[in-house]
Amino acid sequence: MDWFPLWLSLRVATLATLISAMVGLPLAWWLAHGKFRGKGLLDALVTLPLVLPPTVLGYYLLIVIGRNSAFGSLYESATGGPLVFTWQGAVVAAVLHSLPLLVKSARAALEAVDHTYEKAARSLGAPEWKVFWQVSLPLARLPVMAAITLAFARALGDFGVTLMVAGNIPGRTQTVAVAIYDAVEAGDGETARTLVLAVSALALVIVWVAERLNSRAAAAS
Amino acid sequence: MMEARIRKKFRSGADSSGFTLDVHLRVGNGITVLFGPSGAGKTLTLDAIAGFSDPDEGRILLDDRILFDAAAKVNLPPRERACGYVFQNYALFPNMTLRENIYFAAAHLPRVERHKRVNEALERFALKDVAGRKPNQLSGGQKQRGSIARALVAEPGVLLLDEPSRGLDALLRRDLYDVLREVRSDYQAPIILVTHDLSECLELADHVLIYRDGQIVQSGEAPAIVESPTSVEVARMLGIFNLLPVEILALDPGRNWSKVRWNGMDIEGPYFPGHFLGDKVTLSVRPADLKVVNRQEKLAGNQVAVPLRRVVNTAEGVRLDFEGISVELSQSEYTTKTDNDSWVIEFPAQALRVL
Image (cartoon, rainbow over all chains, first blue to last red; front, side, top):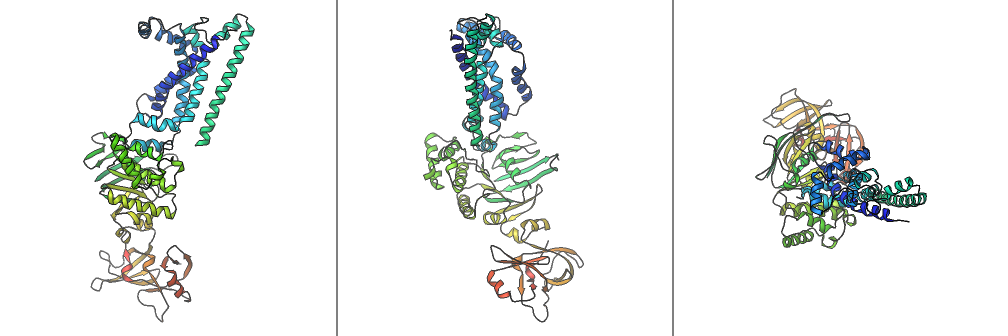
């Protein structure tokens, strides 16, 4: 039994969740509190990956990070290798897959914080980053952690975008979702069953943790 | 010195009728109370000053700084306004200890100075012993002092307090008033306090602005403002007046005398300048300024006999509610009068004011 796909998926999902959180939490804050033109458009853009077919997203990603793209060639000259069809490519795919969910739920969590605290912080002369980092985020800690946990589960489960951007190279870019597809195609029922059960159990635990965090948040408020 | 001209219009919606805030305040050092019923625009005024709500028109100046000017398109964000705001629920950050809360407000100071200032504030507001506690482990009074200390550490140019005594019991209120009086004497900047509680207004105010329906209907020094409401509305709001609709029957400036008719009874009062015979006016008189006397053979000119409706015990003594008029007297005075079988109200002439 080759456990590599599961380990790869865990590694990819962890890294993708970190990146999603670093990009997504400030973005969620900005969408929750900012007053700017085009906020509705930005909101729609963030939601789009939730509803578009994975192939469409994969296609866009190939255009943006492919070897001929500006970003792709920049990455290649910096690291010596291409981004597509590597496990790092799978990270990009997982970020795209998990970010919308993280932004949506983190935004809801940040908006639920009593605005009086933020007003108080601003009236005390705090700049916005400080309001976000020292007041809003700590106060929304539990639901934000729940949002990050769910984003991790979603990053773990990506199939379509990963397949298009990172491919299906066993031992290199084959994540667990792709490996299951591969095993079913090859008629390897045992591998498929084992991985399916492992992923299901993992997902169940993650969702349970997220629910616990949310119910603790509800109890605390 | 703080000056604000604020105009803000709210369109009527499904669940609200339209509302316009249109006020002009000039506020010096000391405590200025914005007094009025809920929904009169008091808190909205604070929010406009602090930068949480943008007026449609107007200008807000704090000392020599322009915080807001609609015409010149100046609108400083709240963090640059230096307006200390003490919120109704204190808004101490629940994720920080009291010390951290106050430290948060001292960010503009250099490190060493910062520690010193935070310690001074804790000392001054008697919070040293509880500095390491989170807000949910503090008593109501401690939270309150903590939020005032935190606001002052940021060195604001004006201190805004939104109903600071809401939800406090009588004893804590007294403590709060002591703290605020102390702050007033140390802090050389305007303090603006919002309340709908008359006794709080009178207890603390140097200056009172009376709000009604988005406008300032009267302003003046406290406590004199209570003695001289300029309109029926204000008298109603001050809530301590008998309002008597009367017709002027006779006026004599020479003797400083007048005679009016109320409910078919004649009462003598002082001369009312600017009014004519036959004018129908409203007189105000404080229940405590009226007297009840034993019935004599014949009623004097400023005495009327009125049926008594009920006797109410109050914090100060006893209130006698007659038909259309109330009289307040002390418990001991009431005891000497109880054996009267009929009640005669005497109007000391100088207690009558025309609105």
